[in-house]
Image (cartoon, rainbow, N blue to C red; front, side, top):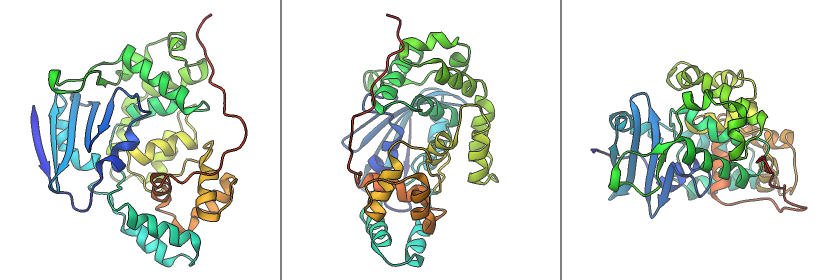
Length: 314
């Protein structure tokens, strides 16, 4: 086991900052409870398990496995230590006074510990997000849980880590699977093929996280060069894996309504109206969305829920 401590440069709420890493409540790779965070990941040096907790204003981290040194060396990236939220305060002050700017300013003050993480694990995050394309959240989370349990491996740490904590599957393993081998996890051919393409390009995609001179917008554009990766998927990945504070998930099933409701009081809206409302905060639009989500603001929902589909053989 390796240990490291870090005094955060500003307020850090681990639950708010790293809660976005957990893809559904049953995600085998991430556990959050009582202010403690457990995470299993693959690094360039191998699998690693990390346990994080803030005690007395100090972030304390323990890590196990061949990737332990790597995850601790990048601890600051994971908890958003380089994430600067000052630009949002500036944008709010410059925006036209009104309910929208007042709300954003209030949320920014209400959640000072919310940071944008930078996991650097592009392909690892792409896998569950590809599974979330065009299906219900419950369906996608179930598929990811089953995929990790079947194709991943127990996280390093032995008896010290929580039972059932798993390392995500090796991209090379997923890339080598035929599309039909993913059907038992509720993944149809279109998403299966996208998943396999992503995993085949893992080294190129992961390199985006280490290109320090690459503008976030260009990183999103390069992600979208992979067939099956559109603006929504690229933004979801960029926000968490690359710490892109301006990433907006255009094409999301609920997001445009959520933003319209929060900032304009409209229960329904499209991507164009959402982007217009977010425009005064360009450069920080992803952070604004995270604040709205953290506050639990959701638009009223009408009509039937989307059905959960099955791709298993009967």
